Amino acid sequence: MIEKIILAERPNKTIYREDGKVVKLMAGGHPVSDVFNEAMNMACVMETGLKVPQLLEVTRINERWALMMEYIEGATLADLMKKNPGRFDEYLERFVDIQLEMHDYSAPRLPLHTEKMHQKIRQSGLDATTRYELHTRLDSLPKHTKLCHGDFNPSNIIITEKDEAYIIDWSHATQGNASAGAARTFLLFSLAGQKDTAEKYLNLFCKKSDTARQYVEKWIPIVSASQLVKGKPEERELLFRWANVVEYE
Image 1: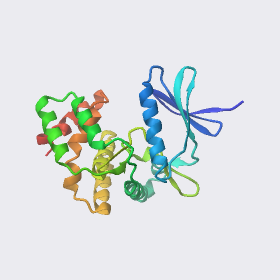
Image 2: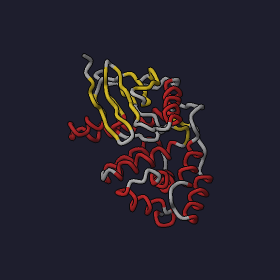
Image 3: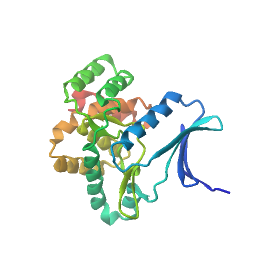
Image 4: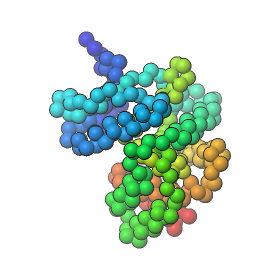
């Protein structure tokens, strides 16, 4: 009998390992379009040549949609950071290096980040004045087409025994501005209560990419507004404050 090993459980999906594959099993009623959009994102990223798990199949299991992917043996960078706190700075530097390498790639068939952000701002629940300021700011920022992950954090990087880094979970991938990706990663660290890591990360990203910190910070209200769409009560106060362009600055 093939053993099923649960890797992660979320309200809208269960991810498990079985027969040498990773299965992302969606909850009942999960939009079919979201399933195939994620599959399309994975296909686009696979074509770049970046080290990512290969998509094997889109299927149905017990009337629920599922994505089947290649299983990558290794430990996440997040787990390595916890197990080896003395090497934290080394791991964080590698984290930024992996991100910068990813931004060197392009995937022209992915959605445009700017268009996605405009949609999220409209859905954010912010007042009309704040939405107007955010839309205006977004339109004023440079439009790039770099490969952006959309949820770039140490839990989504697997380091193999051969010390190769694989980036997983491409459901939010877009093509856009690298500094927008950095602002989102800064936000993710901050929301997780890792304020010192967020600061250290952003300073490291700006140094290694030769990017002004003030420029990355222009994206923080925009990515904060997009995060509001997820409707997490524990994040609401911080996100509302950061999404307010005037107050944040």
